[in-house]
Amino acid sequence: MSFKIAIIGRPNVGKSTLFNRLVGQKLALVDDLPGVTRDRREGEARLGDLEFTIIDTAGLDEGAKGSLTARMQEQTEAAIAQADVLFFVIDARSGLTPNDRAFADFARKADKPVLLVANKSEGKHGDAGAMEAFALGLGDPIQISAEHGEGMGELYDALRELMPEPVDEDEVEDDEPLTEEEAATRPIRVAIVGRPNAGKSTMINHLLGEERLLTSPEAGTTRDSIAVEINWKGRDFRVFDTAGLRRRSRIEEKLEKLSVADALRAVRFAEVVVMMMDAQNRFEEQDLRIADLIEREGRAVVLAVNKWDLMESKGGGAISNLRRDADHLLPQVKGVPIVAVSGLMGEGIDRLMQAIQDAYALWNRRVSTSSLNRWFEEAVQANPPPAVSGRRLKLNYITQTKARPPSFVLFCSRADAVPQSYLRYLTNSMREAFELPGTPVRITLREKANPFAHKRKRPS
Image (cartoon, rainbow, N blue to C red):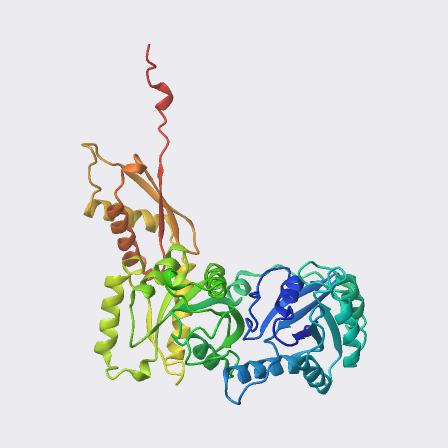
């Protein structure tokens, strides 16, 4: 089990900036607005030769029982319970506040080693606030600037004393290369995306069996893209909860722009993307835009229609109508798997997880060259390409260049003249022939080299 450190403190003292500094990436959203972080976020961190898991938490603040603020504090308390060491962060420029003093008592009661970190200490601006921090009784404050990377050496020295001795690498045998079977069983990266308040966090909480992610009837509760590890019936998944995606014209605040950008990064990192829709407001314009984005990024797609428990009509006819609407409105992912679920009630979870695994398998599908060209000859004979400017298009052969998603190169005589409508015909025919429903299919045109081009008569 890795050594874990939780970063705690009141809002807007720079906890997420320190988190990003230690993981070496801008994973956590950072803004001048207090309370940006809501869910707890974990990352693999390094400080010099020290390696550990770092947990970013919401700012410790008081709130009424059951409120969003109170549940944010519960998330922080859960992170403290997991941690081996606490980084208690204060703002050295602002000096101590009553909240700092109150939550210093909270940190002491956790009965964990605490390092007092006086952030924003660049230059001499934080000296006075750092001196005040001695009054907290948590030891000598370590003056740093998470934004500028100052004071990391002092933080290293203090942390080094609290961490266990590293294992001698010479005593550890080299890992053997992964077999194909082992590679096939590694965690599937899944991003769950959709419009605000579609029920994404509620669904993940049900998968985990705990209130790991904050949920609220208010849209926009999730801000960061939070990754959680899930094992479902022996198969590992790394699932990313993301902020709701609204139309670009409605995104005004800087914080929401950062949240949306973080969600888009999660889509690009994922292998399978679950697009979640509200059963009572499905296939709205923004849903179609999100599905098109996923297809353009080349990710496997699963449509999850959430809040199905609120639907009056739930029979086979309702599912058939969903399928018909999806094929009509999303022709670029024709045949995409559709699963009716209820994240709150836990309905349809097994079907959803199976659909994710099936979509992942299709996304990795490879087709033999012989089968591919047999299909290609039959498809061209059944519907030859149209003549362009009185000249016949010659399609030579096709081959698969890679999977993830299935990608093919079609060699032909005039690549720029092949109509998009004919490429769509080939794509849909291929989906049907090789059972590739819903997964993105890429066909790239390439002109076959003319072996007689160099023998053409030169003009006199």
